[in-house]
Image (cartoon, rainbow over all chains, first blue to last red; front, side, top):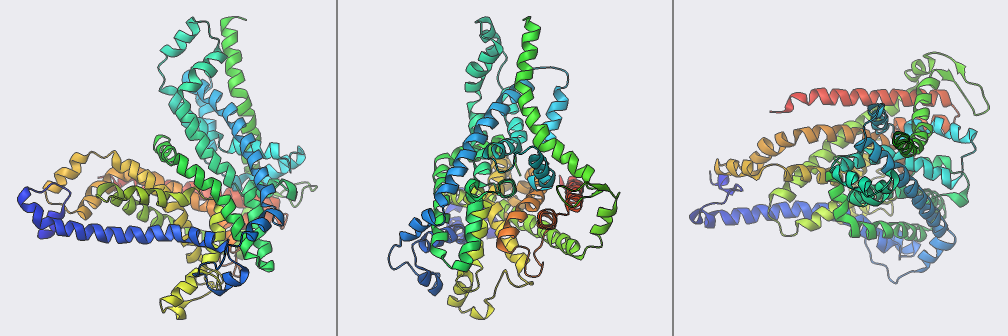
Length: 296
Length: 294
């Protein structure tokens, strides 16, 4: 029955001494489980960084050894012959464009849906909700054909438009919640002070829902930066490809060329912005998940 | 302009750009999928020909499709079960126990869920690599060298290997969702249970799980749908459906039918089937878990 004493309740002072060792043992067992998992997360990434400094011979020799010297030339080759820099630039262009479009569409839409009453409001909200369930792979064929007919293929602007539309449903859903939480007095006061609808939205409301907009931007950033299926299908020329496509091409090529070093260097180059943004925004990310409920 | 007209103009200006894009890039293609799944359509220049339900009938005589469906079925059972279980246990440990370094685990465990699927797929390809991969060489170091194998090249292990990758990717994401849920459970409940002599494990079973049940139900559905989408990228890069179609999933088969074989109509029928399948699956899971609330 002494097991029962390990409960979370605070034991009386007398019991405390006899309980403590059990808690310590239990915590160490839990800790071992957690450390094993932490290694399973960290080790592949660490191994990748180590491998990016190795020669091919070293990579082949033993996956567990340290590089004998730092082969920065892997990084040089990743930029020159594997053109990681060009792919990255394309990704930056696409992410910036899609983010701008998303903000311009989602914030006003969420404002009107969240704070104004009108006929058709429910219908429009439901249409956006339905969009949450339409994944990219389901619609890839008609989307490709549509964009082919409208000459929108192989175009970074239209790829960005598709990206922005892809996260629009979730963003509207997320922001509408924020919009509803603002008391109506603010708008009334703004209107009395002579603000029109547009300046109320941009000067009064937007700063107030900033946490919501930041959450949306952070989530969408990862979606846009990592997107694969649409970029693979809707962009055809090599010069316009984004980094996930560039990397997967690189993997195919390097398997035959066995230039592992530059592939791993490419992966590290892609990881760096993700890690930086994660370290800076980790709190915002997890907070956003709690605010926005769940997202698949 | 009158006030009413100004209000109308403002609302239109706010709503219309988003709606146009949404209809163009989401709603219209989604409707097209349903409509064109009844057509034989084999190329961009080609005119679609109405063939009724033939695409759907063909699906069930298509051995590759059936194999892909079976593989997908395997993944949408195995992956959510392990992902959510691991997430739940970790979330519980990291909220209910007093470990000083909790924050570090939270940060690390969540990290894979923001990584690009492409990066994850490439990394795991090398973990499983038969000669340079560190899974095999790690096993050799531990004296298990006899069990080393080509994990992605063997029909017996390939789906499990992919499942592990998918679990690795998603467990931290659901952990954060569960942690938020556990944080909102009243500490009084745990305290009362503790006084009544319930062990942490009993508290997990009798308090944490019932109190989180609504969140768990939602995450089951999200996880199933996540597997359907993510498996496309993971399979495309890691195995391309191999060896010999043993890791083909419905999404990769859809893509292949459309963009390799130019079977657009058939591909869209597969899309409709998978969509309806996932909705039915969500409803079933919703129904089955309904009575779980105590």
